[in-house]
Length: 398
View 1 (cartoon, rainbow, N blue to C red):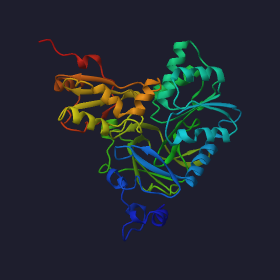
View 2: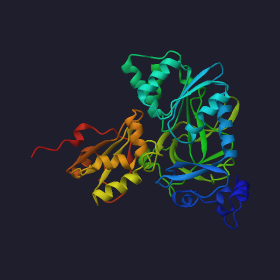
View 3: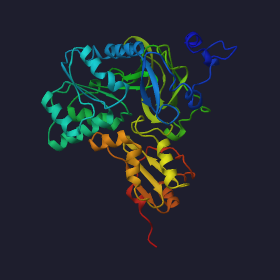
View 4: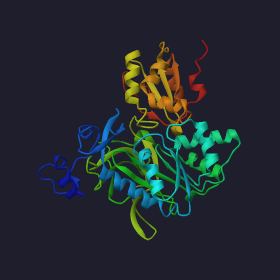
């Protein structure tokens, strides 16, 4: 890995460095200059990445080839005997290649793209796919819509998820609804910068990292998991190095994702890097990182309500924004314009729209929620994974 860094990204290797441990972790600030760099014969995808605002990341044709190839290698034995697939991933690098992956494996494939939720339900009932390939949020909304219709497709034998965190409750609900077992749902985890990082294993129940990747725990001085998991001893912020990427330096790259139980373990007769669970992010990117981030949200709130305090709650990929003061005229319309793709997907029923709540006494609200009062200014004091309780918003009688 160190030799690869020296050959491919010498700017990251200081004079006198003798090994990977001598290289700095690629955190918020160090990664910033590598986004948007011109790369010959490449195409671009957008990601909030590790520094907040959406920015372009290059992928070359050669990189796309191994990205697609390793997915095919991963899915092929698991999908053996399946003939039809339905894809609903909306946008992003994974969405742009999913059809190719499925068709290369010989599956008849229906890619829903950005179509309305009711149309996707109708397509699933008509096509009777054996494989669903969806983001966790879209999968949850598809299940809810099919339940409202009183329909449960019996053709589905395998589910692949990719996108936000697939929380245990969402996994259990999908397995119950479609009548499948734990080994029949594969959760894949990745990023636009790195590609596919890991997948859930039906045999051991842990996540297996893909070949060519070396994971580490980012030190607390770089990123802390404390706010995300309350200081659980086996939780770490994941950093990854890769010998596969050539147009972007995945060298001790800090993902800002918090995982539990990172270690080498034995499964299927082979030693590999694994972890137990993805807990979420320790920064302020949330709910489809490519579509919605608190960095942009802070800009909007600061422009309309300077100095206002605010909090974001994002349990199970739901989104509630709590803002101090009185709602300005036209604020909701501005919010929609600031996040056009998120708004479009909400209009189509694929994502739930954010819930917006203004409170007069913000200190009292924070106290009722048992949260420290956030500082004034643009930045939110972290994204809370709690579900807001109705009584937190109740003003005391005067």
